[in-house]
Image 1 (cartoon, rainbow, N blue to C red):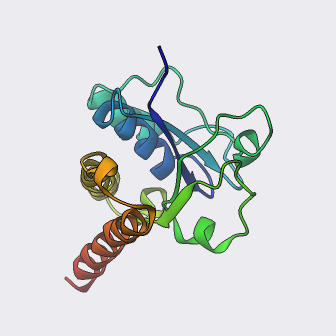
Image 2: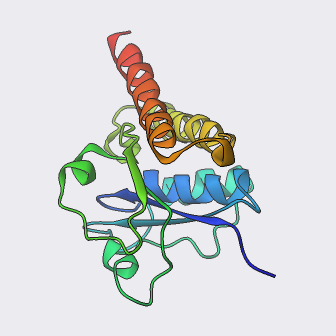
Length: 175
C-alpha cells in the first residue's frame, strides 16, 4: 500500500514557535492527507516554552516537537517535500536551500509571538492568536480540492491563503 500523504515543510527563522505550531496543526488537521514538518534557518536550542504549553493545552502531541535546522530537509536522505511555506518574513527573505522535487511554495507570514511584550495575558494572547491564524490558513489549505486544481491554479490558491492572512494581520495592527 502506498502512502499518498503530501509532505509539508513550514519554515521560520528560529523554529521555536510559529513553524512548530504549523507542524502540529497540519499533523492534526491534515491527518491521512498531509504530513507536517518544520525547520528554521537559525534554529533556537529548543522550542519556546509557551509554544509547548499552548500545544499541550490544545491536546497536541508534543513528544517529537523540537527546533531543527532547515538543512535537515535539504539533504538526499530527507523526505521529499510537496509544499514549503514560510511563516515569518525574515525566513521568506532569506535564500532557502534547493528542496529536492521542486515543491510548491508560498509565504504565510504571521506575527512572531515570541516578540510579544506586555502582561502575561497579553503575551499568552499573542501565542493563541498566532495559533488561530495558522490554524485558519491550514484549515483552508487542507480542504482545497487538490485533485481538481492544476499547478498554476493551486499556486494561486496558496498565494491567496497568505494574502488573506496578511490582510487580516494588517487589519488587526490598525486597531
